[in-house]
Image 1 (cartoon, rainbow, N blue to C red):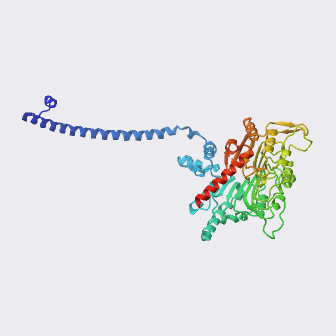
Image 2 (tube, rainbow, N blue to C red):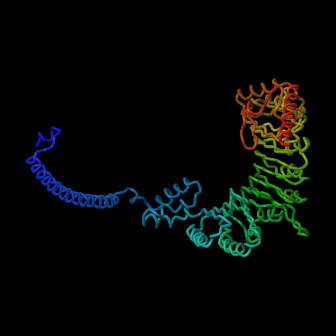
Image 3 (cartoon, helix red, strand yellow):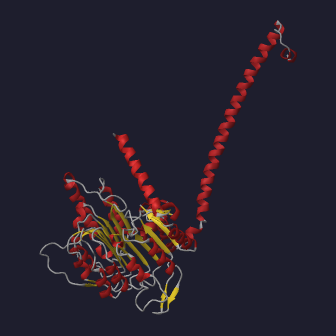
Length: 503
């Protein structure tokens, strides 16, 4: 047969008979092999199953020797689980992970109050029923610990439903209020993103807030001076207070409010949307510990002249100030008065009309001149960071002179004042032109070179436009004034071309 396979020719009759016989034998052998393979595969499957079961059994025995079994409950829950929660960056859902590992860990997790002292309650939600049950369980598991609560939609839009959802909203508001307000005595950090049905939330707070240290309220101009006064008066231990978009005028015919003296409040952040009597709240406050102040006034006539009296009355050491207005500009006199009562200010940000007072006259008072008369310069001697909007009275040349006098630490020989090194300076484009009459992004080459030299010498000097950080080279176009004329003609020509195309 080997010879028949080796040649290309038809087999003889005898050979064909042998071939048929060989094929039949091969079929029989293959069938026997298939049967044996099936038997062996079943045996292997059984062996693999036994091996897997034995491995699982061994793992259970091995788990008996796991070091975590020897950990005291105080270490497992009070240290390891709490650390895991901190590493979760505030994700409440990750607090329950230890409770899903095993029965013992679940018991330890449920008994560890520190895992349940942070609640992040999204509101409004269309499916709050299940959440309400979980919130109740969360509050019970937290024991008597101080609570950190976020209620609303912080970091997102503040929804304002229309009337068709009013019944739903009031029902949910009542349920949420009942749960959260029962524990006001345990509030430590409370952040509230207010929606329409929760506007009266502060009115429902009864009693003191003895543990409250941080209060942040994001609203839509719904709260009044009385609301802010009430919270500050009740939270005797408050350290940080933020009320965004406050409608600060008190209700008509409301009784006079008593003054508030808080020895602990360190940070005050208020955004005023409307109301003529914004000074009322600030004139009632005395804050000796105040170190950070942010006030942004959106009112058309909102020049916050109440700030200097507040700081003077409080005798505080203000170190960080962010000031902005959308209405009348801060004059250099108003800013100079403020700077004189804040000698320890190290960080300053002036936005929009709040920066208008930063003109040549005021910058002369900031520039360190070794030969100046006593008291005629060196305001803000501890200043290390300055952000200022560019406006029509802003001079790049005077600004460069100021930076050059402060980019190195020094001592004022006349007054004996130590001057801190200015480390950060940021320009915020706002107005289209500067004091020179040129466009904000145009300046002399010499001034631009001065900026570059100071930046390369270690000063963090940049431009921030629309939240984007720009280098000096990215924003400025240095050159002579005649170059501006060419640029303007080019822009006008481009606009004319666009109008022609549209026609």
